Length: 91
Image (cartoon, rainbow, N blue to C red; front, side):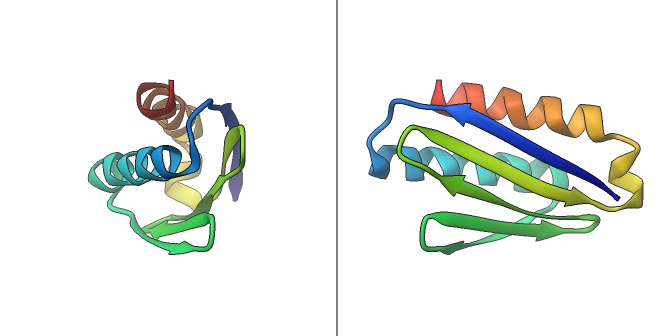
């Protein structure tokens, strides 16, 4: 099982960053079929072959995920897509 750990800096106020994270989660849901729920400042997500979280920190967002067998083979593509969406939504 592979894992992902990405930290992306941001300069947004908490409400704007939270909205951006929801937009990131919506894009990832469309792309990978994920479901998500908030737990404080952490958006937990899961889907077929992936479980993880997006943690809102004061100056950064941290994305952690464990990939199942099939997605492990596409780890590089998954990481690139997450980084692309984070940059698009958080700057």
